[in-house]
Length: 129
Image 1 (cartoon, one colour):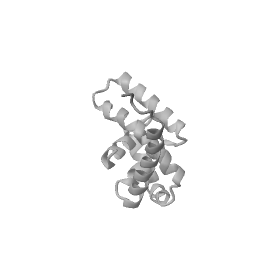
Image 2 (image 1 turned 90 degrees about the horizontal axis):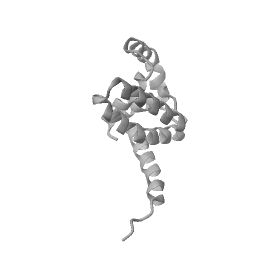
Image 3 (image 1 turned 30 degrees about the horizontal axis):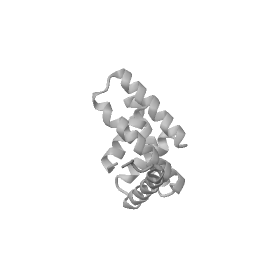
Image 4 (image 1 turned 120 degrees about the horizontal axis):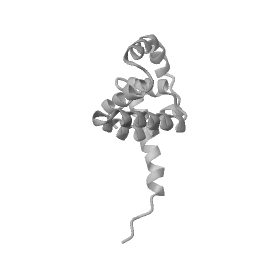
């Protein structure tokens, strides 16, 4: 997932259940908290973000042409993904936003994605000849 798609996915996650004016107020009020929290993301949070973003990215890419019903279904899927990875939307969004400009955090996310992909690749049986 590219940095721009992390940001797009973060915007999508932020929009789940928030109207645009509410989102703007929430972002204004939480910006200092997010900046402070960025330096303290745990390895578990970064790993959860990496895994969740892998699942959320394809959903967010389909939303440009989605119907309202499909958007509602996507929101439900994203909530389930975040819950499965023990992440709340604010933490997901904070990591995605900070990863846009913080190269150290980008590297941590990339490493976490590689480490979560490696076990999955190891579990996949080879194709029969």
